[in-house]
Length: 525
Ligand SMILES: Cc1cc2nc3c(=O)[nH]c(=O)nc-3n(C[C@H](O)[C@H](O)[C@H](O)COP(=O)(O)OP(=O)(O)OC[C@H]3O[C@@H](n4cnc5c(N)ncnc54)[C@H](O)[C@@H]3O)c2cc1C
Ligand code: FES
Image 1 (cartoon, helix red, strand yellow):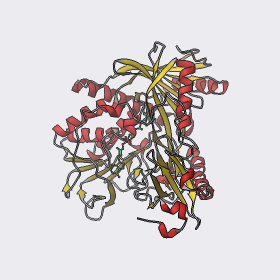
Image 2 (tube, helix red, strand yellow):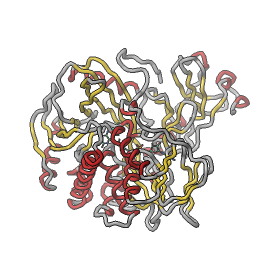
Image 3 (tube, rainbow, N blue to C red):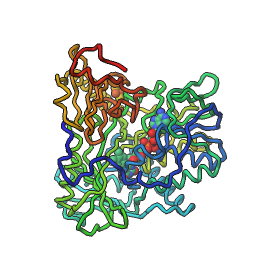
Image 4 (cartoon, rainbow, N blue to C red):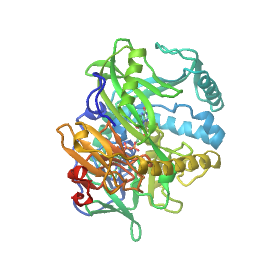
């Protein structure tokens, strides 16, 4: 719970390097009812690429974004563009068969080539650079897994090479290289697509939150300010689908956070993008910040809302950087979360079987540069009624019994565990006992659990810690100064506003005096 910046080198606040790029235009709120051919909800890589494809095809498109464009997970990624998605192909072959595993690889390579061609076509300056992707093992257990992955590469005709070292001061057992992958600056790339979209007449609205869908007469999205967008198609590209229909997405995926630091180092970066197969994950790539070559060091995944002290994850990356990479200083730190389905393949397509007009794309397992781009291609093919060979692979209503049943049980048992655990974690406290920039979960005299955060100026902010989605207890995230839900990954600011769904409503706020007086009469404003 203690929120002190214990390492001098860590920047005080989370701040993604990518989102500092300031050429992205500002867009108005939606303040009237409109009608378009397709309404896209969510301005990340999926929504923007889909809008780009549909406007190119001549459709009238509206893009709704609840915050600023590109301030979601896409603005907080590592931005490796690769089909090497950690250890995956051996598992996919076993679980969904060799043909589908091969299609997963092909579709992601198609996405990589799409990004490359789009950059060439519009001459986009986005630091795109071809790189090899390396997956390495530091333990015997993972050495064996990498050997199996190499066999899977052979079966799927993926060009790869198995080697026994990497060009860093990290001792490894073996490593698997996938050649001709790439990295880029995602916000520069997508800002250029946004400019293309506007030039083709698409309407973009920021600070516009979609909250509901009605389909009775014509598909319609309603915003939190009660305006409507009617359209032939609704495309939910909102990371967690802003509308679940009867698709039960909350039960079929979970959210995991990871951490990134941008490090100045005294070693010469040898090129390449690296990922450890072992836990805890370590992900590396180079990036040029202010004309200086830096290293992005990422990793430390955990289920959202299920880490006791999120700052310790940055510190672990810092220690790793000092030990192996000559880390001298950290210019930026940030974290974000991505969603993972029960069979590890994204959900892209009709929200439920038979509902042709509402499409979704979600859950890229931290590989959304290619998966999100491919999702956009698939969604636009569905809208434009074009054949797409990967429709069945990504169909959201699919169910493969082998991985799905086990993971469904594990995921939902974890939700129940969190639901109960949260209700038990309580302590009595007074305002004086909370330090500035610290948060605690407190117990009121009438037995209710509240969250109290004392900001840097000493002002107390109290919220009800019961998540407005389905009632799990949120936990404090000291790295982001947010309340995070351990069940399905909703996040709230310290004043209770929704930062990420599936929750739609803010946490109930309370008067700070309630802590010391400890009566329910003081609550609510
Ligand atoms: C730490 C980390 C590192 C990663 N590194 C890589 C990597 O190296 N390579 C890779 O391929 N992938 C990586 N990923 C994954 C990748 O970044 C994501 O999969 C991808 O960015 C998701 O894109 P998206 O468009 O689905 O979501 P987002 O970028 O989150 O966009 C969704 C948008 O929808 C908006 N929204 C949500 N609800 C509503 C609503 N109700 N109304 C209106 N708007 C709404 C949000 O504000 C947001 O802007 C990483 C992920 C993480 C967490
Ligand atoms: S996100 Fe589902 S209960 Fe909080």
